[in-house]
Length: 380
Ligand SMILES: NC(=O)c1ccc[n+]([C@@H]2O[C@H](COP(=O)([O-])OP(=O)(O)OC[C@H]3O[C@@H](n4cnc5c(N)ncnc54)[C@H](O)[C@@H]3O)[C@@H](O)[C@H]2O)c1
Image 1 (cartoon, rainbow, N blue to C red):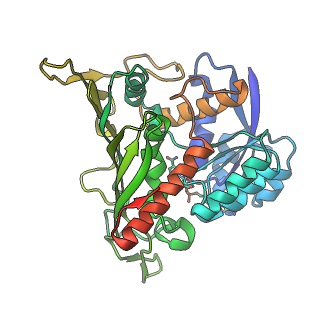
Image 2 (image 1 turned 90 degrees about the vertical axis):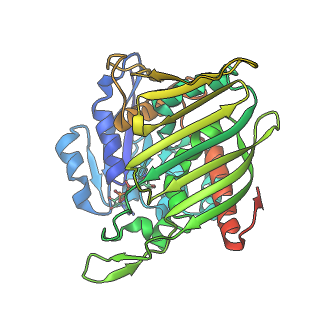
């Protein structure tokens, strides 16, 4: 078993998700590589307490990411910090020669993303990937199998999205995701968009134009100090794209990212409609995928399949048990480690977002901002 020694920069929600995934690595079967978290960093020292309690392999705890990057023991880093810090810390990590899993949106804006891409180009020996676990749900893996076998025929329409309720309550105090300087102008697109783009981009469905409708619904929130603070970023985004497949066939593709989605808590969904087959899934019913194979002239009939635990990377859980968010996180990390150890992904849809795919998401979100500004369709 090969071991890759990791440092984590940013020990908040996502830093700890990786910590927890690493601690239950034994849950994966048949994998010949594992992470060992040896160093953690957070600007707020209190955030590292969880690692001190639960992660006996941690030998370095610091509040200065430069100290962590100087640590020769650290081979790879996971960086999960607010968006305004992505370019600075990702570039520093790449320059230090550390393999990098960076959180989305991979730069607060397109300029920041371009700086990260330039650092990657200067260090071809460093493996860099962007986090998104959305394709690792078993139902999405099944839709990927349908795509790879050509079961959809010519694509008619694609809908992909992420509907969240985190800002539905107007009395919830403001956090950094509603602040322009920390989350960026993309707002909910930067925050949620990569997850909705992951499958379409991996399938080679490129947006060629976008008409965006972006909404700011809750204009101010409690600031946590007795006053109110303005909400500066977009709450909800609907992107109606023209997309083209590898054969340059065009079709409509809708990408939706909502922070204020009544009736939803955290719903990821994917719907693909084609001339020969269609499939749809929502994490609202995480275990259920619906699909239809259409023979010209025959009846149309949706079939409903319970997926169970059909994972890209085999795990100890029995095949009939349903999967959840933390399972997809574990799978995403398995994909990162597998690719690092083997030099290539296990499969096309068992892989993390590449820097090229992250750059494409920036092109889309930047065009969407332009579209909203002028109420016009913008070509990519
Ligand atoms: N993949 C996913 O499903 C998913 C889910 C949520 C968030 N995210 C992404 O993860 C990233 C972090 O989000 P989060 O929800 O974990 O945020 P968070 O606020 O919970 O954690 C961020 C941490 O970064 C620390 N930090 C800030 N400045 C720092 C610095 N200079 N050096 C070191 N640490 C610093 C903060 O103290 C905080 O503990 C964002 O890019 C976000 O978009 C991804």
